[in-house]
Length: 218
Ligand code: G3P
Image (cartoon, rainbow, N blue to C red; front, side, top):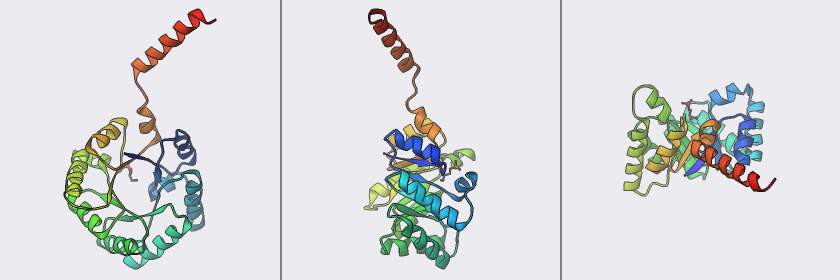
């Protein structure tokens, strides 16, 4: 399973990249706003900076919701760097745009996926990735992981090349469950990624090893 970090924060992106396990980055307009990135020039520059840090796919989301607008914005984003993936919302205009981008060899991430039907439609249009939001489903007492499981099953029935990018990952166990299900990619916060390393028996064991070593090697 590929690991993407879901943030526009450059320090967190650098920290995750320095771990050597990072495969890519996803952003969205809310994450960009959280970092105070506003205005077309600054937004485009920020994407370029992220692409300079991480050697892997970087999802940059369009704001337009009409076909022409999505195409115009998406082409500008795609021209920024070969690793840019144009993130397009799951709406019918978005599906048409994904089909267009697919025919032009422009990579896409169909975002805001909340049902298997939406996942089928995006795959039919040729989306490179689809982003089912598992945390947001969990937030409303629905089962985000079941959705990912259903989509995995459906995609495996056919020859869709579309990758399942589990998004809205909130904690470490979401990552483990996504791996069990067979999501192709997960995107999550740095804290959830770093949480994978934690185990009290590891800490205890290491402490013991170091103390035993020190007893004879002062
Ligand atoms: O980038 C899309 C998704 O990962 C958002 O996550 O935590 O805002 O539901 P969240």
